Length: 300
Image (cartoon, rainbow, N blue to C red; front, side, top):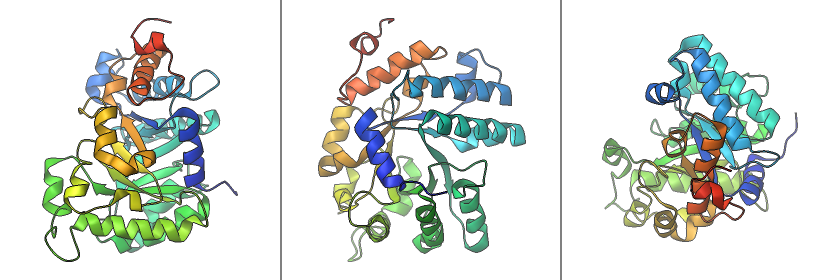
């Protein structure tokens, strides 16, 4: 199957719907708050309701959805089946999907992960998948090329907001080669440029926590040097705001896909309440076309 490259598809989705991604994270506490059982059936209902709000009525309200894979896997094969249905329904609705799997391994094991999330004949195939480079960036090369060949994409972890992340990602900041995170950004930028063609974004993006984006400057990292997108989780419930992210990302702001999970999902369980929360997030990001009734929290 031939499809338009992921970078171009994502850029078009962001231009049409705005730079917002909805994280679909069926935490047990959210399932309980929605009145759903903590079962595979509960996960499926949760995911499809969130997708319905994201897909909108004729025009998507978000550029992409990002299901958190671990929260489906904890229910075994039935949970994975619920994820497969979510991915299939999103595909049918024309909404891009980013599987938040954070896979990273070596050799044939990594090839297996790549086949699961990027091959057309896999029921788990998403438009993009998150990958961890911390076994060495080179372990991702084959997966990145596999994604590019399939018209799919990857988001490589660069700067994350967890407190432990700095103990690895910031190492080497005072050395000539720069911090580990800076080396990852440089490698990802080179791969994206190599695979992008003459114009547009390529298949390689980065994961940069919305609440720690300002650390990039401190580490000597030029995020704008990447031609591709920057997936920024942490918008909303974790404290990042649209204005704060604009300042933190600086010149790289046009590349940012802001991700909100709990900040929107906590408004469930109805589609209309989720839509209000999505529109409030859109308003914070300055996305045009936000329904002011939704952003103000009033019923339509």
